[in-house]
Length: 323
Image (cartoon, rainbow, N blue to C red; front, top):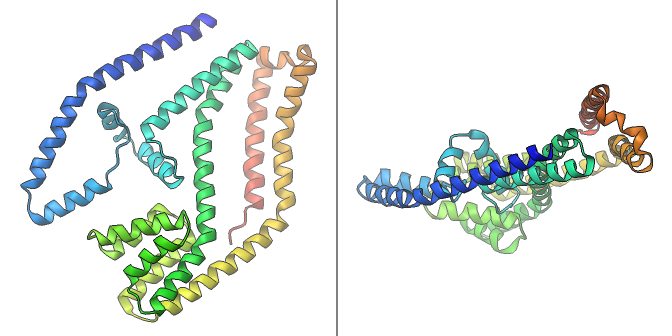
């Protein structure tokens, strides 16, 4: 089995080397293509040129390797992955992130195989290692959204005070970018810069709602767009919206207090089986070894993991109450 692992490692290294060599040869073609596109854009009509420049500004490379970037752009899931990385403020391109996942899965597979001496351990290590970077990025995204929700009412209050003092809406956006802390400041700075460089305010607001897909942000965008189309007192609308968001947080905290026992139960039930298996593996390895060497043990492992996963989602659905 060790020979198979070595063969896989050699295959991966050789493949990456060939891919890197081909990508270096493709660099000149990529530079020529960029130059040709710029010359073509310079000959377009003004309206078409503005649209092309807007698309170019919003365009993001998924990988610095041109061939790999072209391949990744064919997948919608990779584009969604790049969007998730941007939402989590993870400064890594999607192509590099996928390579990191592969390397992480390979390393954990080798470590698990050496530690356990069984191909089941290797597959489990590869699976866990592949999803560890994704779990980290998802955690960073959730953490950033939570921090955004906490600071968002402050941004709305700042915007309401600026509008009440007689400042224009776009000027108030710049004030939020300069006075409120991150991550709210960064998102509103991008909102301000988009409309500053010619993008309609409506489209800039929709981009904000797309980057931060939170209910509060959607309420804010809808309220501002309706006020700009139908009129009304924007400062009063923003004050009411800030009050509603703060009341939601109060109710949400009460819900978290009432569901604390359910969350603790879920953590205990999820941690108990692997803890018992690890303890038995250390204390009495011969007793737990048939679980990993016998085919019936493999079926029991698959069944146990499946039931654990189902139980996790069931308990999570019970304790997760939308406010």
